[in-house]
Amino acid sequence: MKTAGSHKFAYDVVGQGVCAVDFLCRLPHYPRLDEKTELVEFSMQGGGPVPTALVTLARLGARTCYVGRVGDDEGGRFVRESLEREGVEPCGMVVSPEARTTRAFVWIDGLSGLKSIAADRTGLADLRSGEISAEIITAGRYLLIDGKETEAALAAAEWSRQAGAEVVLDVGSPRDKMEQLLRLTDYLVVSESFALEYGRTKDAAVAAGKLFGFGPRAVVVTLGCGGSLCLSREGLLRQQAFPVSVVDTTGAGDVFHGGFIYGLLRGWDLPATMRFASAVAAIKCRHMGGRVGIPTLGHVEDFLADDPSRQSGRPENGRSD
Image 1 (cartoon, helix red, strand yellow):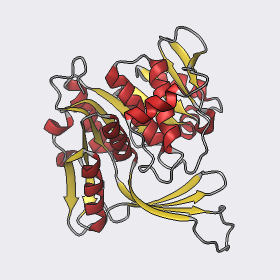
Image 2 (tube, rainbow, N blue to C red):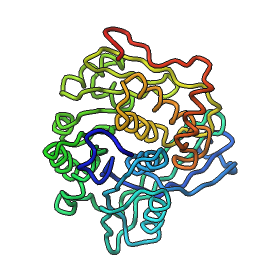
Image 3 (cartoon, rainbow, N blue to C red):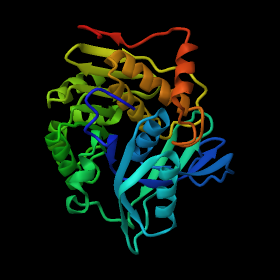
Image 4 (cartoon, rainbow, N blue to C red):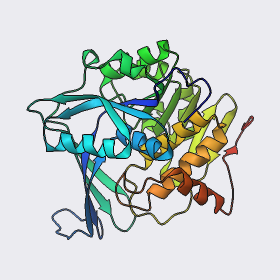
């Protein structure tokens, strides 16, 4: 992808964060305690917020590289092969001998498509700053981090900023040294639950305002079926969710991140970027798991062309462009 100012970067996006093997179980309904039920569908897919966003970007046509830790086991080989198959280069992957790759067990309610996730990281230590390469980290025009491995994330963000790259932070739950991460972030995309908890409010827009005070160019809060909102210097923008038949919401936020960064790469304004990211996430929700339903660029363009509302985000105050 040729973009203005990107000639000095080998990749459009470098991502550093945790990865996992997802074991997905779709159930006819979410079981009560001590209830037995049979699966409707089972799938094993690559997972993790950053890797899934990178797969999204790769399917859309961006050049991507992943930095993270896996174990020297079948899970680690599965993670690497699944990334390579999608065109994501695992050039910064650290393989730990006698360690078990992170696993995530996902139970999906067949009635609503909502999920519960239990992650097992007990077999793998956090990635440290001394294990990552500044040369690889600074090879991307954008750096995407999840902040879960705080030491490595802080180092990566500082290196990227010094190299003239921009940092996108994906946060779903509180992290260590949160304020330091926020102050190194150019684009902050967070879950509603994190925003409300961190902002100590029940209003996502108020929470976005508090997060905006740390200095990012834009703060995005994803609201599930309620859509998303974006606060920038141009004001507050709301994007409605696209109505689709939801099979599974697993990875929807991760895919949204990929779609959002793609819009940044293309130089789109925030309304167009939010609309595109929302569409990419909606299409994914028609399929089980975080990876299988990720669309190509052509698929997203057809989806948006068929949208009867043709509606970009709505500004609440200030300008939208």
